[in-house]
Length: 210
Image (cartoon, rainbow, N blue to C red; front, side):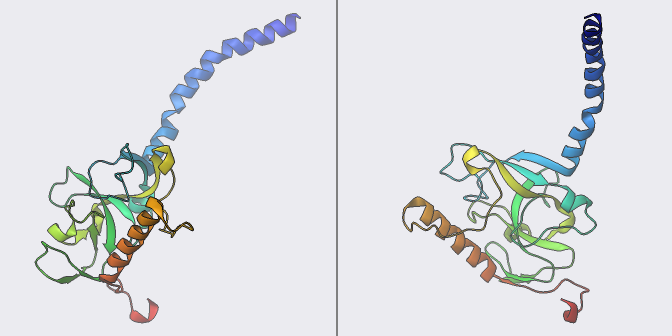
């Protein structure tokens, strides 16, 4: 009996030490999480209807991958990725846009860009918002340095009914109603984007190896 009491006392006496150690070491995983990933609430309308659609009463909260863009030996992003980047006009602003074209590609531009098409220079990308009438993007300021990209979208965290990665648009089996119309709209938007891009090869890469 005395042994049980002693063991209980010992376990209780160790609890403050345990909590002190936990508080001391807890910043490490938290710092690692924020170093490799970041959580952002999406504001504005430039990425509608992919983000912040009119059908939702909430602003989307999303998880973004910083490691693949900033720390990976080869910056891991591609056409159609949604990324955060510093505005080329105001470094204090963080924009959320979609990569439409990479270096070496030729893209047909939209107004107000002064040229009908442009070849993306080395070390640059072409970014646009999904809502073309509510976005300041490469059609305004041209190709942007890839070094301005901060992270890429991994998944939507909130609201719960939208939780998950941004999936490829698929035609629902029941071909009527809002879900069908939204899917068809997403498919047409993607086709239109891709039709405007002539895929090239990165600068300095031999044609036989690309």
